[in-house]
Length: 181
DNA sequence: CGCATTTGACCAGCGC
DNA sequence: GCGCTGGTCAAATGCG
Image 1: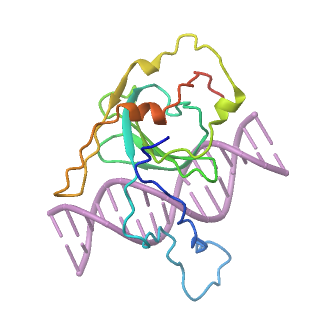
Image 2: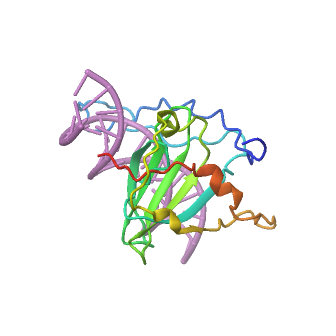
């Protein structure tokens, strides 16, 4: 976190999101418009949309990889490339717009592809708890495969070093196989 | 009671 | 121009 920071900057956005979705299944007489645009009005600042997407494979049987942060599942969709559905997680922190995308490998059901988007702006709850439970036998961290991120920007060679030190930045060294729930 | 999860619906972008 | 996929939100429900 000292330098790097790609660009992120963040702050902004998340403003005009009042558009009430209000499903048509409510009450009944709504008349007028049935639904307003309720999607991402990302329009301001054309110089955006370049967050560091880090995708890496992790050999694990559970989707909820305890990386030290609390994730709230906000969606699930089935992709065509995989017979398994893809789960979308988001950091529970209000100021943390970090998103996580968990998908199972279509070849190895024991391997899940986790794609992190953004960086945490707060400390991990696990750190505050100071939990230090020694994992008994779970050693899924042994297999970590870095995936490359294709750069859509044509003409601009955007293929910099792959992850490397970046991984340690997004993955805190605090992983305990303690699963609640 | 609170929080996390689940499911459905809708939109936006891209491809053909 | 239309279709499809992917992505996100919103409300409801269940469990602790």
